[in-house]
Length: 336
Image (cartoon, rainbow, N blue to C red):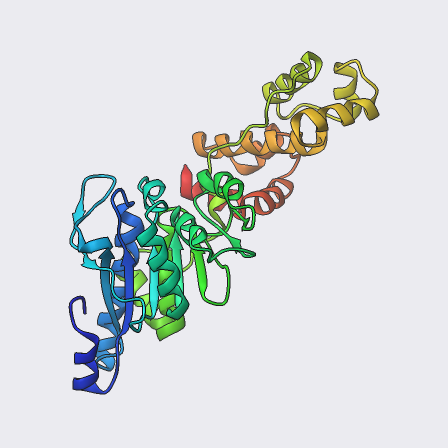
């Protein structure tokens, strides 16, 4: 339905297509933009096949209607930013390396703020959350973004509560934020499901060879985050010992003895210097060790659980679900 004027749909059928505007800018992440574009256009074909004019009028727009050069060199044709007073259903704000410059474009940010006041919903994808935040759409809200940029978003916009785990989250009554890159497809499918039902969304997902809902959050995709090294040498030695043998006996009393401290003093010092209590730090190290072994070996989960200090497969499973949102078996199927 791309290129079909919404008024034409009204005149011919009595229905109006939902206008979806995908905002382009130099250095945009191609998949942040093209992924939702494919979902909405695919859903439009499905909807129009049943009742003409009930799909989506999907457009890429940019300041001045200039061609949009993505971060990987792909150039996309765009229409000018429409008058923010015109009817619009959904505005999609993609991310990419170019968001740093785009957030300083006063014309673009002012337009986002103005059009969002009238739009039914606004969607950010990946670091597109920066554009939404810059336009004041996320103040006082919970939002997500790409796991690698969550800390930066939280630091730059303290009025926004950043959760780096969800694939997408409804941040307010009209604003949705999606995690990194392909998460924009997940969110677009969910919005299609809201608009046209599960069958429509499932049909589009199958055509794109995707699950309608993927298990877990984006934490499972994040690179391991190791805690900072302690300033005191005895604590660093304890960290080294835990990481060298995750499955070892690492009780607080044993670790304190290694550091030549009382258990109470050791707990206070390591928490201050590392940012986690001893038990939480040991669990983190064991989880990362299990993650690597699930990816790099064919060993049974029971063996990995014992080797990494979890004792049983069930304990490992509970830990994975709590920390990563997926079971060890699901994690292995995805990343091995």
